[in-house]
Image (cartoon, rainbow, N blue to C red):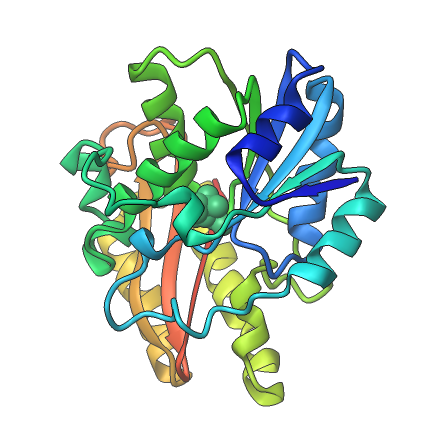
Length: 277
Ligand code: PAF
């Protein structure tokens, strides 16, 4: 496996290939990322992972400075998974000047849910993903469905900019107790780690209620928020949304494909999760 840090090195490493399959990451890799790499392998003639903690997608009070940088351990896992190239640029390499050109996703997608609680987040994500897909000459790229809204932003961006890239979404990998794998799980202490399963359990209960035919979404969402609050969480949202555009479902349109999504803080750690209904 080649590890490259600069754009000239990356271009040289890619010269012999026509169909890079790319997994963009911020490092601090876990089994969920490794599943993305394994899914990418059959999609191209070379498999590439990027590791870059993207300042643009962090809010001023978020964990950019403390986000774990674990390049050596990440590369060991990637080599084991059969990754061919790792692109791990410095900030100076990727943002040699302040990034003046930004990719602004449509507000109806970017300012709801995660975007409401993390203003500017999806502009930061879309801008870096555009840049990474361009640098790596990606022809396929794999993202986790755990970041459901992010995947939708990336899909729409690639479609609207007519980028010839196949975007693949992979189901969320979970631990035995159901917790969605996430780099931020590492912030949980032992007691929080035990309680963390409540997030996926709450979403499961909400999804099951909808599957059983209930369409009183607002009441169901309020119950789910109360479940988390009563257990000491600080939920930002627990909602049922249409899969197609993440807008509020209409109770008189049963049969629409839905997804339930949640974001909540346990102690100082903010976790997100979702389930397709
Ligand atoms: O999901 C992530 O790890 C990041 O948002 C991404 C897609 C690598 C962009 O920085």
